[in-house]
Length: 298
Image 1 (cartoon, rainbow, N blue to C red):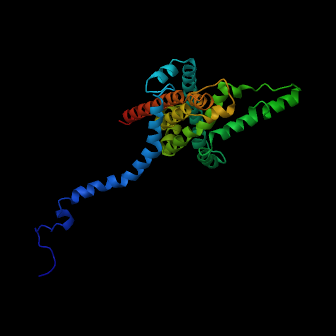
Image 2 (image 1 turned 90 degrees about the horizontal axis):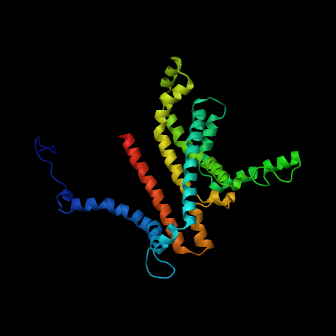
Image 3 (image 1 turned 30 degrees about the horizontal axis):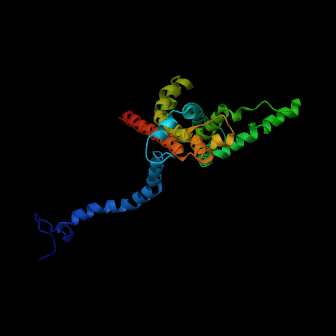
């Protein structure tokens, strides 16, 4: 007899298939591989977050109560910080969407020397810390910056007119400057997937640039705009370094309020309450973005 299988015969089952617990042991293997990252996540993120939430229910008088929440949420400082955080985040996101879309259009569709180098610089810019951009703006528009120095040198005035960096408008300018590349990066990736033949055909039929952008480019860019805009919105809600380095003392956002209560006032329960509210807002916005993006894809 040869070793060839007989037609119609059933192949013998392997020993591991015949074992009753083989399938159960195989099902546990993915769980074992997932266990180390879950443990690390719980140890370095979930546990500190749980401690913050726990501390927010423990007033300085002792015990466990909702008094820290009632005191903080009823305070004028919290309401003003919440309003400042929200309108700055929304305004910065809108500015980043408009500016990022226009700059990405120029880089992707307007041929000019160095376009590829500029696109690569956008990737490098994403790794810069936020305070570095703020310091660059201070060197240019600060009270002793280049713009004010040039003004005093020409006019002989005692001080220059550029004082907006220490106002909410200075914070808004710094956030738009820093976060615009976060919108440009997904847009450039989306534009690279566009069919150039379709754009050329529209141009040959007499369609002008605004119409091509509105009818062809913009619909393809909407998912990238939604992704970049949602990311910028969440980042602006939690931005701390830009507000701190601009020196805008009259601008208090939720992250700076956490810093003030924890470091300056030693009000740790109040700081934890503000931190919990900030986290809830960020997570809620992220969840809303996931729902909207899922429906858009459907």
